[in-house]
Length: 197
Image (tube, rainbow, N blue to C red; front, side):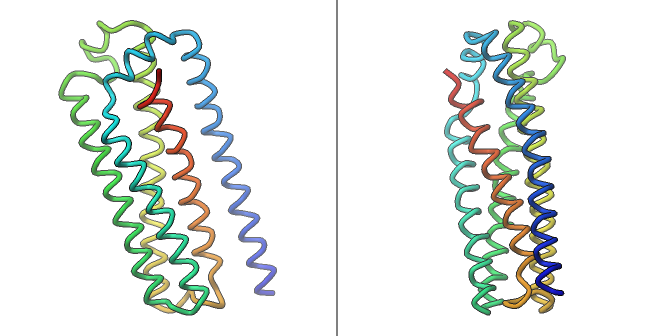
């Protein structure tokens, strides 16, 4: 019975991730259509992005994928304490990602680069679209990171409490799948907005 519940839970998570993939896929398609229409404007707007901060956030999320995978492996081997600390490291890295994104957004907003601002309205049509997509897509991604942080925090609680362990690792595995999906979305967002040429 437990195995059947575990399988159902995994299928449920994969179904959820497919709906998320369709959602973000639609946004990526929208980006592609507008980029094809305004290649030079997208290139010009991308020059305003900080490749350093984007690269830093990419490294942070890739490392966080490693730590959540290691936390699952540790739990399977019965090392709840190690799994707990690796989950904590993943949460910390998620927070670092959001802090970097906060400073990145703040810098743009202080310079007047945000939807419907006077500075933005002076830019070309393609640049306005680029930054609108940037805020929408990175904002939605950031929201997913925040949700992931909360879910992993709950996994830490359940791990410490002993509710999940070597014989009951499905919840953490599903959480790991979600976190890997969030990281993969960023792997696509990074070149689209920071390396657009």
